[in-house]
Image (cartoon, rainbow, N blue to C red; front, side):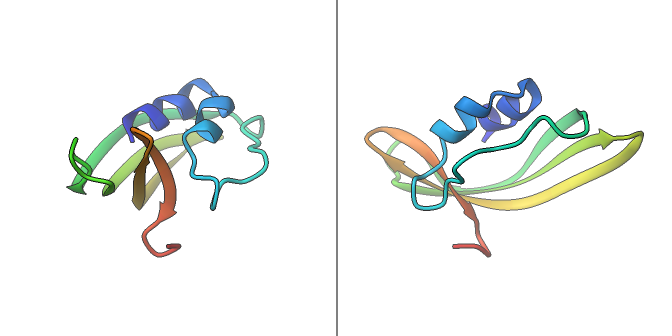
Length: 95
């Protein structure tokens, strides 16, 4: 989760797509819209996702500013581990 947040901060579309599970991954991402100033990430809850797990859930809040206005993204995300790599599957409500 933290590495994907960092990829958003750095505008690393390649990393985000590479860590997105193929069943839910979009064809492209457009991070070139209005500039986003990321302010921080707080992981609120983690369910599983340890070294011996194959699935995990992360609830987080990411704070940002767009056009001078503050925003909060509160999401509960589901991840799966395949071939030793964690992949973002989607939000819990999506899956």
